[in-house]
Length: 67
Image (cartoon, rainbow, N blue to C red; front, top):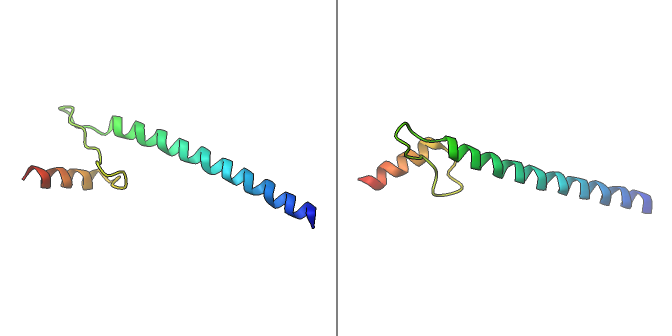
């Protein structure tokens, strides 16, 4: 039984490490995406709200603010 608990704890630690690595990779991907997601004139179309990752949603929000 103790061996099984140790195996489960080891697996949980491995999963937590993988999640942390994936979060870091996602953060880097978002930083790169925001840097490349711009128009010809250099105006960036990035989301002010971090949950708003859709470019068209960010653009619609910017248009609404401009009016």
